[in-house]
Image (cartoon, rainbow, N blue to C red; front, side, top):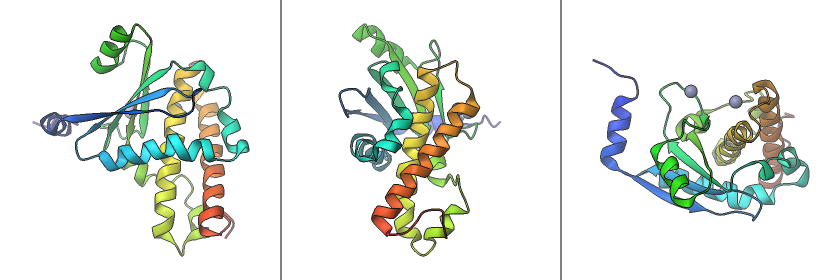
Length: 200
Ligand SMILES: [Zn+2]
Ligand SMILES: [Zn+2]
């Protein structure tokens, strides 16, 4: 008998999960990051990206999500897992579909708590723009961490936008994600590798 995802969930339950509170700018929601024991490095990467890299990015990059912060609840539970059984990079959990953790937290705090899951190994392997990677092809080791950081942020903000604006279409939200990822990468590749991203 094979039940997709069951073995992974069972292993995760045996190993246990850890939680970390991630606090960025006052206007940005607090993240309660829940991750399997052993995935501390991925949780730290998400924390650095959200707390430092995003606020330090150029105004024209951050401007894409200017209207996001005011439309989200103050707390978002982020469930990290290595992969999703369905293969998706992440999901937002619409009201009523949150995990027990998020529901319990919301009732304890008496405040709405939103929830997102992110599949960090799938996000690490994600290649949104294969041609553009050629531009910095000589430095794959230095490019990889930048890609992972940009992809984590892009997927996190993509799912946040679904939560904040349920009426917006996937096409619109995806278009913004692609723009955001491209702008972040061009900024970081330019700063850190001294190369133009996407123009080989
Ligand atoms: Zn899915
Ligand atoms: Zn989407």
